[in-house]
Length: 146
Image 1: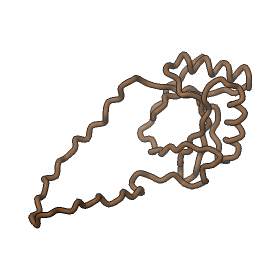
Image 2: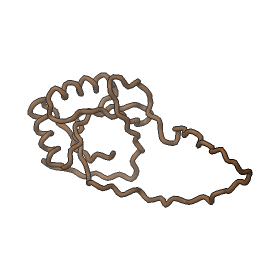
Image 3: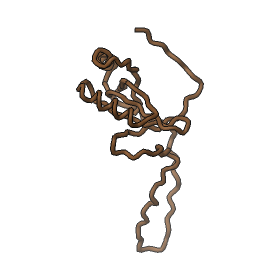
Image 4: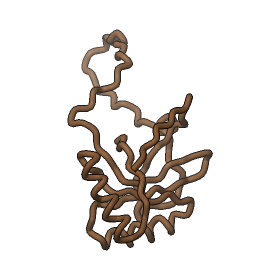
């Protein structure tokens, strides 16, 4: 098998959301659009107000502990129903957990059918070979960013 590495200058931000047959069809909500509830105000017995100085949080991503995980993407559909049909077909194989994630690309919903996550790339390759042999589906091994 030959693996190719591709690079690009900029990638669009994708907001993933898990989908099942009970999930209503709607566009994923971006973080900036989510509203946070107003903080509760505690009642005080004194009339003096003490202001806390604002503390800046460093812009550092938390370090992931536990290593990378991998998924096998076996389909990507614009039609949600087709994604559900493929998911159900693959679930009968009992090879791995099958799930659907919804992404928004160019304001269109895309449904990706994936297997996993797996703790290492070798386990993902085993599932890829089984899916190819049993269902004749070429899957794509991807690092799982959750």
